[in-house]
Image (cartoon, rainbow, N blue to C red; front, side, top):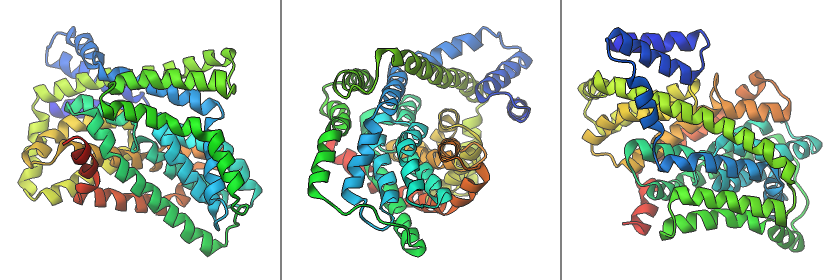
Length: 424
């Protein structure tokens, strides 16, 4: 039955059936062949979606959409440019910095790439930047969107692995900053090699003005994460507060959205949420079937029969995660793979918060590795370049981010230092 389950799953994928439907159909067919009553299917789907922490997903998605559709992302770009735009290749640094700021608001990689790319691409074109490199940099910086908290994949991982969302969020700060620093360093190298232009000279008045105009956007993560870490509210409650805050700022303070704009934003967010929740529901059936067939235990025994060295096992897991990330969307890949690897990770005594960041970063890199590569599609469409061109330009950045992944994998303190300090 194990072979049947995976053959059916891969067959449905290869013929173009959507990932969520492929997972559900493969599971249902396997259950039918095993003569298990199919009433199990809706029961497990409902059980998979019936989780209080998962309520944070639609609200973080909605908050990100509201902020992306307004001028908040433009204000963050302006704020970053006023401080670092004068450097040679400064707009590239602005792209990375703005992505890090927006990552601390929305929790989505694709939303980060879109929100930062929209205001920056016209400026990059106007100043003569190489569009292939620029679009690739924006796409790569978008991966930080799911590493710096709040992060939708971390909420999903916390639900599947029964871990603290707050500790995962705290663990994401240093790795997210490391990813940003590596991308900025690579941008500076390319800027000097290709003699990219500098921006306007630094002016203290402009910097202070930009800070004043973007202060409400910069305050968003302080409010959300400060409330979570202080224990004032949970991650789920924080997501609701983020939506209310985004609505108040966009409608009544910045006034960059009208009430008539909200209908489309709500519909778009609902569609995104439904897709994610459907995948979560069908993945629960798949996970239940795998657990019934003892597949995770078999995989754990197989990996540990190769080696019991946890560093080699982590290297193998990283390779598998990176491979899976190339052809599966982040949420579905995470929900499918975490139950498989948990027995191995537990037997090796690896901290589950540390492992959560390993798998989050690995799958984030999948956002810029074709064929799925959602961030490449977003940044490529914004910049008006082909998938082939942006895929070639992003290769060095993928290598740089894989380097960060390996550092995080083999230096647990990069993840655990802040959680152990603030939440011992």
